[in-house]
Amino acid sequence: MKNEDEESCRDEDLKLNKRSPQSRDDSDSVDRPEHKDHKTTHIGENRVSCEICAKGFSQNSNLIDHMQTRTGEVFPCRTCGKHFCHKRNLIAHVRTHTGEKPFSCHSCGKSYTYKISLRLHMRTHSGEKPYSCEICGKCFSYSNQITDHMRTHTGEKPFTCETCGKSFSQKRNLKAHMRTHTGEKPFSCQICGKTFSKNSNLITHMRTHTGEKPFTCQACGKSFNHRVSLKSHMKTHTGEKKMLTCKICGHCFTCNSSLIIHMRTHTGKKPFSCQTCQKAFSQKCNLKKHMRIHTGEKPFSCQTCGKSYSHKFSLKVHMRTHTGEKPFSCQICGRSYVYIIQPKLNCI
Image (cartoon, rainbow, N blue to C red):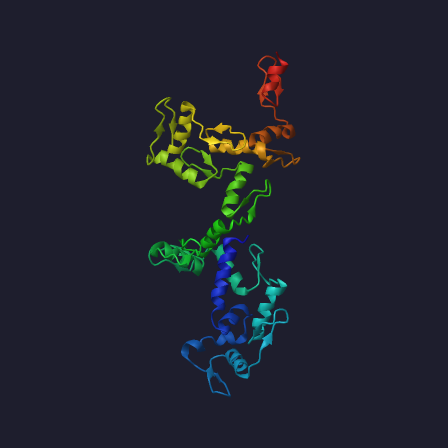
């Protein structure tokens, strides 16, 4: 799984590779002495010329490149057979086979195949953002980022699904969407084995195992495991979202779906039924938990001993055997227990 920095650098590489051979080679080669004469490219001075066609060049390296195209000399890759007009292009290409990454970042140690990739990566450390949006002024580190951003203004969606016709502003979004048709789920949980079509969904799922709640309300300190949950919660502070009150018991809720679920405790309605044993439940999540009785699925595993459980609460209770935690105390003798039922049995 590649991170955003790697994808951005790769896109920049592809764009640079579409330029002329000389512009690519100069980016990836070591500094040459003739670079000191770069000013001749601005004043239009041609210092050297081709003996065959008399074409003039400002630098000797440009003449050498030109002569190779005139003579037809090529440099083949011994691995894949691809041919190159310039030897340094071949040298750079061979790294795609060997995996060699000679250009390393002095700040974080990350290595790259091409010098231009390292140069682009350095923007993550320097904070350099040379590309700015002419409409809103937002700045970006890479040219592909501003290209994607501009579509938020224009509404352009050039990437279309051939199956259902749905369009997307970014190619990676189309790629993720295609998995809804193919059923592909390449991202899997290392703890319970559950698979997902998007990496973001896997990251969110992992919080069910870790209990992590990284999104915290700055107003009241309440934490959430989903960004959208925090966003919805914040409306209760701004007044943008009014509290919904149960007319029967007066209990308040922030969203209508929670109120609907709560109302079933009064009406007794259980719309979710098990197709195996016909047992009914008021909430879909409870039916999902119940189904593990039939399937034998145990998605919650102990990281200490490897024992697995069908329910998260069961794992939480089990962990006390490792931590030594005894949260339940007998009010008669003061003795502490792992399970709530133990004081009742021992002190009767």
